Length: 628
Image (cartoon, rainbow, N blue to C red; front, side, top):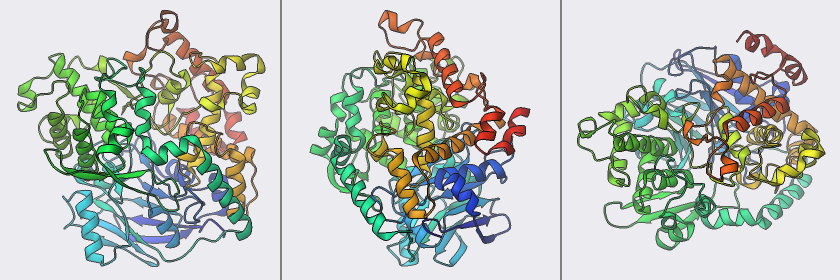
């Protein structure tokens, strides 16, 4: 089978059994792989209402047909489970080398279930697959674990993905860390592995991935390379990573001091230029990547001396603007700490900001923090509070549950919660002129506030969108202040993004354009050449729509409703456009939500209609979600 290996590994930790099985070819064609195939397994095998941290939950690792082919930027893989933080659909996308290594070991997917009686890790060395004792690794951070595994196995070429103390201590914002600094699992996915007494996965593969037509694949690979390298925004990623976003958000779109405002006075302290001039050392790429956005950094001396990699804007902005800190060295140190502890820096920084506002308002005091001063801008306290969360010490034990659950314990704090579906917000502030569709996307995303979904700016003028909303409304799409047409754009973006994330392709070549640098026809063409299964652009989008509806159905089955598709209270301001003040008009937001549901083929409560499910070949889930 070309492109797809067609093999799934099932690991039952309770029984200690490992079974390799065939993946039905029909499932591969319907869901592609990666995120799509993971979503299918999650819906089928996780029953409604189960405890995400119980043995009934499954943890799924999925690769896509692009992985291991040396197609540019084909190093992404997906993890999927029920989220301990949101109680709904949880997924993550992660880069590095592990996806290709899994394919070389002869696997498309790994499904982990049950709970081990002692700490273990999964060892995959081609056909040698076993659960190994990890008791000596329990308690170690992700870096210590990675290096010790290399030493023990005497193989520097192994690829690992492990949890740290945060996952072991069931922190609801714990993540999985691969290759030291490649991370995924917003929503506490790392805690699911911790609940199963599983430290992680180690993979070594020596096989290869075959494509159906080598000459045609080579032609397309060269075309991909040319398109990517000629892209203006890709060059900015190559030069600076995601820190270019600092300048893009500085005009008033940057959440500051727990989103009390949208402009951070000291934004110039964490631009890409400042980082490159002072701390950047060299770049690193994921498998097959030509962008090399992973920039190493080193702070040689002082209280924040550290090394690390990939200073992602999402985390740095949280430990600077969101908490009112002007010191980039402190934020880089916090990032390194989060990666070692295995804790989601976006959530952790957001939780610290939430605690700082509670301190500002007198809702928590020095007695609650063991004399830790949580005044705005106190970077040292932010770093220490992050550590305490990972080890559940003092106030950190409450905050380790996530800010939404913590608000139940901190009386009077619910009004300044900055979350979506319980997941801590990213750094996008609804400033004057922000794309209203971006806010809609963040409010409705299936895993909660998701920084990897909902970029729709260049869908303006796309014929599919114009057909969806009607030519008479397309003019409104050119005005980012407009609420019109955003529902149609988001419906299309979700189809594209779900299909793309099922391939194993990096987000960067398609970011912010959804059908831009690499369009759906490009992606479906290479999918056809890799797998030998002919598929056009429209069919590709239809698969993405099927996957997104499956994610949505999972959430509905878990009791997530229309009222959960919303923004933090702080972001709603009546008639915001007319007053030219930041914020989202709540009435217009609801109209935008209505449009999004309608263009998605859902009813007014956001439930996929039976006719839509029939159209997508998902009739088997209709009765389950209709009952909800």
